[in-house]
Image (cartoon, rainbow, N blue to C red; front, side):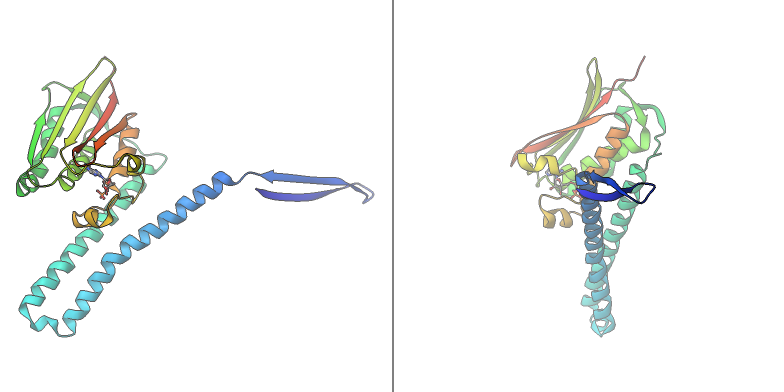
Length: 259
Ligand code: ADP
């Protein structure tokens, strides 16, 4: 609690009493803590690649450049870390845009199969490299009311995770369908799975179950929090079912477009 006190003084300067205000700041404190954690996380996440880029550039200038193998190796690291930095900054800016009060979607009728195929196409190569079977199963005439690019972004993020967290020779399936009340989109994998107790946390900004694994696969820990915000902007919801060692299913539920 914050406590404020003020005396009440009468006309003749006599003491009449005192006003005490108790202000419950639990919620304010919590929000302030979230903000502080966020700034600390951002700083840390930005610092890591910057330190690495600076270190390797300095080593090259100190003479390592003369060794052709070292030159190529270090430049490759510098490039990879720069790309990481770029992704991080882009995702942070996008997240802050999505979180703004006046954030607007470009609403239209979107053919589900089209965006599913387009999103899957982006990952064909990555899936093939891991010998993961990537399948799209969509009814041809299914329509979602929403923002075409943002819906695709949701799928891209879920697919990137499904492929990153699925070992070689696994399977990733994207499918969709509808009931009387909703249209659903689903990304299913036969990957490492997520422990039950971790599931509520994976949508938090920067939360990763396994930091090293996420980093290796190019993850920033922001993907799912972007997904959740975008789904909510569509008045939808997201559910997760997962079993450790067997796989994970993310399902997005959209309210049915009115006819
Ligand atoms: P990241 O960039 O680390 O993938 P996300 O916000 O997309 O960040 O996901 C948060 C965390 O949730 C991941 O680090 C990972 O631990 C877990 N996760 C997300 N998708 C999957 C999945 N399909 N299978 C297993 N774990 C997953």
